Every structure is written in structure tokens, then in C-alpha cells.
Length: 194
Length: 40
Image 1: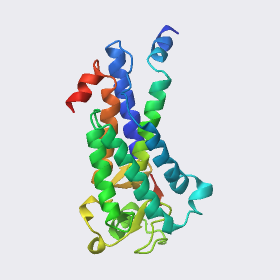
Image 2: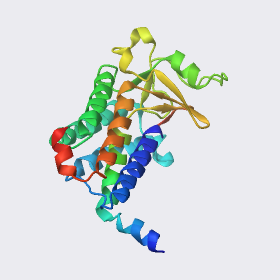
Image 3: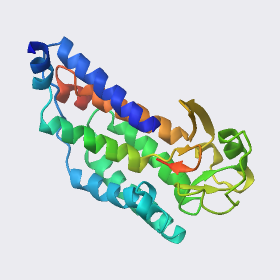
Image 4: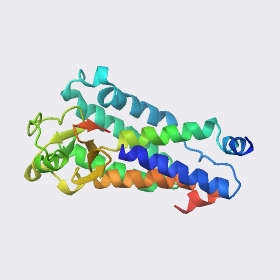
């Protein structure tokens, strides 16, 4: 959700920039876009679609997540010269790194979950297992490799609280930057400087 | 009407596809966890 807002804000800012400068909103020439689509579809099925996310076995999640994000990494490397892709790619790399080192899922500690749900709802999670139908695995701080890169920051977000990682922050920033840059007068020149 | 036409002229199919690609990338690359364990 927080990432969706970064996209909306970046697009609005970039479009506003284009309108103020009386120019068209220009899209960068991204290569191998199909990699993003192929990476997205399995995650959409496994994490978003209510009819399917509850039936995808937890054992499949590490392979699905690491495979999907590896495709995104290839896409990023193929388009690294575009504005914002360096930051997006760095965020992706940090997330992928901590996921690979922690059983193929993003670690979240019980302490962070308590901060997400301070009212103390009946725990539906178990340490060492997947957290609900999310991309996360519940691991104590001591068990987590590269804990600093896991979901440790809790932000209020409307009626919700959201736990995010440093990688998520960079992805939000990179998405905003990429969309904002597309409203610039000379998108090619700006892309070459990044 | 003129201002709506001006806004619409700033957006074409390529832009819509580009924004969709960024949304898909951000969703697939990110791993935030919301209250209730809803991923994405």
C-alpha cells in the first residue's frame, strides 16, 4: 500500500511537472518489460488474490519470491541507466539479500508484529513460520541474518500500521523518482546522468 | 472542457503501461507487511 502511494505521488508530481512546462509526459524506453510482468503474476496469485493466496503452499513461497525478484534484478540491470532504476534496484537487492539469507522470505520479528498489532489480538502466527499470507517469515531478532534489512520500521498508514524495510523505502523512493523524472524536459539526458 | 482535453492529451497508452509496469515492479520487489499480515 505504501508503495502504491509512492507510485501515485510520483506520477502526480511528474504529470504536474509536464503540465507546468507544457510538455507531454514522456515514458523512458525500458527494455524487457515482459520480465516485470512474468515476475509480478506469480506474486499476485500467491499474495493478493483471495481465492488463491490461501491455497498456495508455504513451501512454494521461497522459490516463488526469490525467482520472481531475480527476474526483476535482471530487468533492473538491463535498464540501469534510467533515472530512479539505480535506487529501485538497490532497494530490490537489499530485500532480495535478506530474503535469500532467511529461508526465502522477508523476516519480521515478534516485537515488530506486536508493534503492528498493539491491541493484542490472538496470535495467529508462529515463530519460524510464514506470517499469515504475506511475504514474511516470523523470526526473532537473534535468528535473523542481516536483521537491519528486515521489516523493522513500523509506520502508521491511515487505519493500518505497516512494517517496512530499508529496501522498501528505497523502492518507494526509486518509484517516485522514476515517475517524477518522466515529467522532465529531457528524459534521455536526465537518464544518462543517473 | 478545454482543460480536461489538455490533461487527457498529456496521457497516452504508453504512459498507462509505464505506470502499470512501475506498480508491478514495486509490488513484486517490495515486502512490506501490513497490520493483519496482508502482504504487499
